[in-house]
Length: 303
Length: 252
Image (tube, rainbow over all chains, first blue to last red; front, side):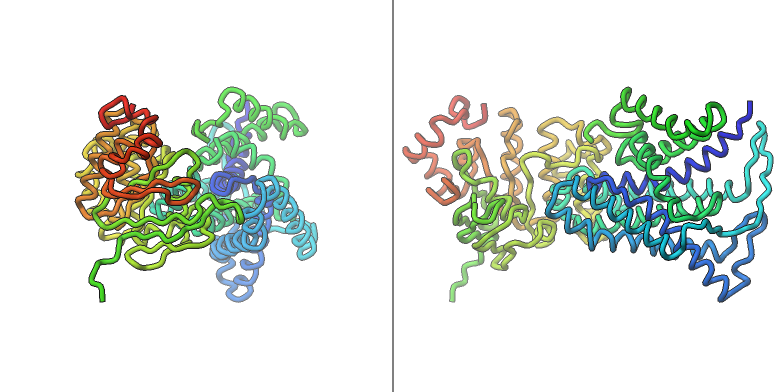
């Protein structure tokens, strides 16, 4: 039996997981499903691409790749700036659209508005960059055998490490810092959080920045191992929601585990059943988990 | 040229409600001095809970004033009230059940300068030793009495000038109500002004320095706790049918 699908699934799952964390944070703190989250992934990838290009043209030495990887300091620096910019884009979107609707209308209106925002942002990307795929690097990477018939590229290993670091950092932030406690508090009861002296608007801003930054990280990974195109985030949207529901809405580790399960199930489906069943398998899994444990794998009963 | 100190909390003709043009509180006025327990009573729908929520910044105020030590704080956002020294304990959902006891207190301590947080939390644990024993427990697993103590401890973290509680005895056994009220008297002795909305009229009046009875969002009667307890009209209207009449000054 070939276990290659496990490695492919984990890499895809890590990207889905990082995106799903944004979805799950937005849902638990703002109480709406943000269908424009996929666009934050695409915009993050394009922003990073443009900035990496700028850095590379200003300082060509930074564009050289690290050892076995296909990327160099220019891309790392660009990704950090891209994460900040995508967080900023999420904030702007909230300021001009979601915040006003949240104050006046039902949650479903905000969800519909996110659909609209998703279409507008995607169309704008197509207008600016066309729908032709672009790449961070055209270098071919040779996959190394790591046993059990599995081969993995240096980029993929780096991305798995980066995901682990980002998720661990977020977990520590939520568990041990004051802003983390405030985010958990707002997620449980915004009214009590206000009574306890928490500026809920500030918590919402931090949530958007974190969600946007992680979406950008997910987009950069997708761009590195696959390609960058305006639909890249939209195509990831359903797996993102499947992962966040599977893991339990509101749970950061749950979103990552959900992402890995969806990623591996999809990669397994391609190998064992056929590529056309790819999406169906993850949703079948989602339905089974929801029937057996409606709060998801890590969700609390109170949610 | 008066030298009388300003009351810790004074509410002047407050008009408040959820919808503009449909006030629930219709010009209520109350005063609470430092080191005083003030009880707000009234029939169901009198606007007691809305009044305290409006004071705490959770319900829109249409007119009137809230003064804290003479400084106007009317309509400040709820989270700013805490920083000004006004703490509120809601009737329901008054602790974060998914967080540990310690995290509930650490969260509230975020309003204090970082250097004071640990010391203040330790002081609260000495005041509520039961909570120290349950420090790492998820707050949702606490008993009813412990939950109420945690809610009060959470509010006290910021060393408030005024502590407002919305029916702290709701759902508690008479013994636990006694314990909660004992704690409130200790808090009063530290100079905090306490405003208490209560259904449990007899028990609340027994510890009240001053009491107000609201009807249809307005002050109807006011006086000291003992005056209102002794008043035959109030006895008939608010205490006679009180379920507390059966027990000795405590809840059923």
